[in-house]
Every structure is written in C-alpha cells, then in structure tokens.
Length: 517
Image (cartoon, rainbow, N blue to C red; front, side, top):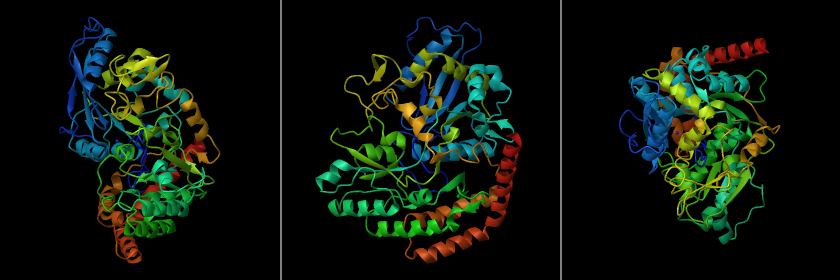
C-alpha cells in the first residue's frame, strides 16, 4: 500500500511498509520508455489517431521488468483503440513530494502522477493540477460513475474544481507499534499481545531493546506521532496546523503551541541522548519501509494494513514482528480518499487520453492485471485465483509486483488475493476502519487554498526546517528554551494571520456541509 505517514509537520516518515511517495523533470529514477515485441499480436491502433506518449510519475524504485510490462500495456490498449505508449518515471520516496512541487513550479510537462494527501493539497492549492469537471464524465464515464456512487470526489475538489482522482478503498491510518520480536525474545524481552499501548509503554520497550542491543540502530521515529494519537489531534495537512477531534468548534491551532508537542519534545530528547533515536534520523533519506524489511531497524510505527498483512516483506524468513495498537480507546481519523490519488498535470498535452486509459482500467480486468501484477509467467503466477511470485522472487526481490504508487489505481472489483494480502484482507480493512474509534475527518473534502498566505507559509516551513525539526528529534540542548524561541519565531511570522485565514476556510466549509445536509 502506501508509505504510511503522518501528514504535515507531524514528524517524519512513519513506516507504512510498502506506501508512501518523488519525482523529477530531471532523471531521478530513470525515464522508462516502452517499446519491444507485442504480447497481443497486431497492436496497430484502430482509432486512426496519431500515437501519443503519456508521461507518468510514480514513487519508489523502478522494478527490473517495468519496461517490458508497460510495453505490453501499450500493446494491449492499442488493440482497444487507444494509440498510446508510456514513459513511466520513478523517483525515490524520500524525494518525491518535494520534487513534484519543484517540477510544477518550473512549469514542467507531464501527464499523470501519483500523489498523497499532504503533498496533493499543496499541489492543488497552487493550481498544479488540471480541472477535470468537464473532461472526467466525457472521457472516463465509468470511473466518474464509480466516484459519483461513492461520493468521493469531494475530497479532491477545490473551489468547485475537481483536480484529482482518489482511490476507492476505505482504510484506517491509526498507528501500531511494531518491533522485531525474534530479537526481543532472544534477549528475554517479552510483551503480552496488545500490551504496548501508550508512549510510556513504547519508551519502556525501547529502553529494554537498547540495553539488549546497544550497538544496533533502534528507531528513526521521534515521539510526536504517539502524542498526536493520545490527544486526538487532527492534522490538516497544511504546515503544522490542526485541531482537536473532541473540539465541537474545530478551532484551528498550530501544533507547536500544544502541550503534547512539548511532552513529545522532552521524550524525543531522552531518546536521542539515550541512543534510542538514531543520530541520523533527522536527515536519513533512505526509505523507512526498506530499512524495516531489511532488518536495519528494530522498531517502527505502521498501520493496521501492515500489522496484519500475511507477509510483511522481510528479506530474511527468520525475522518476525510483533504489533500492538496504540491508544486503542482514542479516536483517530480514517485515511482520506486522497491518501492515494492520481492527478493530471495542468500542462498535460493529452488529458483526454489519460482519462480514457483510466476508464479502461476501471472496466477491463485484463488491463488491470497487466498494470498492477504485470505479465503472467514473467512477473507473477496464478495459483487458482491467487497471485504468487514466480520462483525465487519475493516481496523484496520482485521484478514488478508491489511497485510503488500503484495504490491509487487499485480497483476493489479486480484485486486478487496475493501472498501479501489474503482473500478477505480488504474486507477486514474496511471493517476495522468502521469501528467506532475510527472516524472520518469532520473536514474530509476540505482543500485549503493557501495563495493569499503563501509567503508566510513558505517562511513558516523554513523556520520549521531550521529550528522545529531539531526540537522534534530531541537534538536541542535545552528543550524548554528552544521551544519558547521557536514559538516566538512562528508567531513573529504572522501565525495569527495564517490561522485566521485557515479558520475562515474551515468554517466556510463546515457551513456549506451543514447546508448541504
């Protein structure tokens, strides 16, 4: 799925072991151009239209069979009258959202990209994505009908303009603590199932692991995400602003001004000084999911998805994990439909062709299998109806399956059981997301427009990078003084004006929702 993260300022890459986001008008990850022999015989397009190249961006590393698979995708859609080939680019996740913003600001041209909530909101608010109100029902009527039935386009609409195409799977994003239980048991460290529930429980576990393995990297995750859950904070995905879920007025506030932010900073300070938090955590750009799977970390945070997936994707079969739900009595908001989303660049030369391709993907199971799983016998095998890896391949060594960013293209009607996700997995995910403690955000569908305050937000981000991040990672000598100074700097940068504008939009959105209902 997606690389699991808490959005915005809420610290740092949290592991959503398979998921999360990179890209560049330059060559990061490589430009994949698809040619080669056809798997589908004569691939001459029947439409009479000239061949076009659709340029896509996804996150992660390019898999070995990517070129061959997308050449086959091109051949197949040509037999259906869509005369296109594909230029598919991959950017490492840690760089993804930043490069998207840079490329869009530079006016680069591409056709489609994967995005996720925080980054999508920034891109959309800057006008980086094409308005689809007229094009979507015209060129992708089946996909449009699916969205209409699920009423999920609201989350990808800003100022009345549809600017994204969200996924259609319901999931929770509440965090689980996870640790290498094989190593813990080897050191005589035991925890009862579901007994690690609080920040204090996590601290106790980490202290024990550190004593047992003093020379190993333990964790790159600061304490802040734990306290966000404890206090039921809802991050707006906009520069560290949010509100409390139990606040009936949804008063917008800055995260650094909250008492839990200070609590987290002091805990992170203790972890940093005690060697629990890796010294390079603040600057580590390696994919956290890969680090966990490769055994480079002993502790992580993840979601229900990866706490209960059949195969967590470890590179070594001897690795085992134990997971425990954090603050199970606290409410958290479910994953937004735009947690995984694709969008069409405002400078796309072929938006109608992109939409026709996406509409085919909505209705054509053979095309879906090609795009998601690849070529049968080459990148996957079928065991009954279950997709399995070919001989000598697995999650970590796959030559195509599990490629990054595919989640926004998933279709529940076509998803097959896999070695990672058993047959009833997605039903269980949906059931979990509907538990009373897992709720939809009261501002789901709100896309904030930050143009009027963008200079202040840019400076706010810079102050965070220069000062706030070090506080979150426990890397300041005096937490109380650093936090006081940091709050003053943010206030001096027009925080009151920023909050006033965001509150205005939140109130306006809530009023319109009330009117609509």
